[in-house]
Amino acid sequence: MEKRKIAKTGLEVTPLCFGTSALGNMPDTYGYAVDEDRARDTVNAIFDGPANFLDTSRNYGLGRSEQRVGAVIRERGGLPDGFVLSTKLDRDMETRRLDADRARTSLEESLEVLGLDRIPMLHLHDPEHCRDLNEITREGGALDELFKMKDEGIVQAVGLAMGRLDIMLPILKDWPFDTLISHNRYTLLNRSADEMFDYAAKQGMAILNAAPYASGVLAKGSAEMPIITYQKADEAALAPVKRIETVCAAHGVATGPVALQFSMKDPRIASTVIGVSKPERVAQTLEWAEVEIPDAVWRDLEELDYSMEDPEANRVYRPA
Image 1 (cartoon, rainbow, N blue to C red):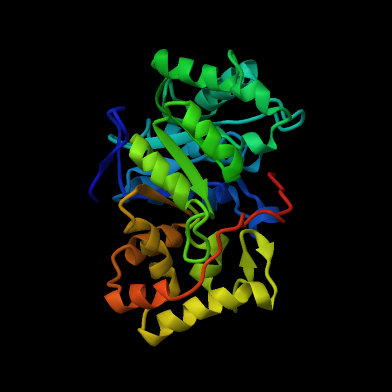
Image 2: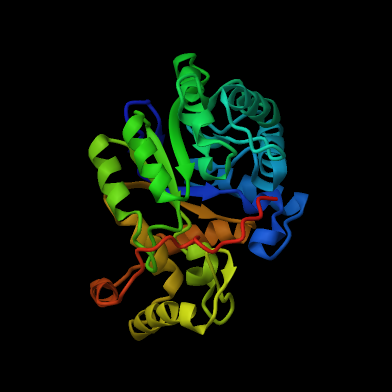
């Protein structure tokens, strides 16, 4: 795979990144469990494939995602050469505290669990779910601590990963981030991150677009998975999905590859983050990235309406 530069950090990543939140065994979010062996096989499939980019977090599955990724890293004697691992500074899951001290503790926990002495890419995660945004943004707060970690050489690239755009964009304008991760907000169904992506691209930030399948419905189909952005969807909510499915069917292509390549073909997006929970999904993603999509599909899809609203406004958040 080609590789794209991450700002001026020296890191280069493939246009596909594999997300590992489901590997933390989060059935409340995804509707299914993932055991240790399946998670380990999935991580090995990622490391053995052509993509060089994996994303995890300190709080996915209350630490299980990082633990399982770290176990494979140790078994293999370290990260594969040239591989970029991204993880996150996370709040204390009981108190929701994310001040500078908690940020430092989160980094130390990640280094220990992953078995690494430095983190290639580190994002401050989910400030909208923390107890006090001021703890993060004030002088001497968690963001200052994040950039201090970069200055210390423990971290190579620093970024912001979150959902709510009304909080995210102002933070992006106040700090010289290398990267950002946005999820569910730039898909065939929703383009609410468009303005933010324009701004970030002009600033030279590497945009990592996560969840182009809107949590799975655009990959598995409205009949099999009537869930949009982790919430059960009624017929009205599924209607836009079905219109997309109709367009794709008319041209003889599956919706999954189209949803994936919608993100991958955007020149602003450095890498598209795809969550996987078994080795077969890794192989499928790589195949879908290579599917030939007729130009007529994109023209017809441009005729369809899409949302600019917050896709998670009514989400019941269950981080475990």
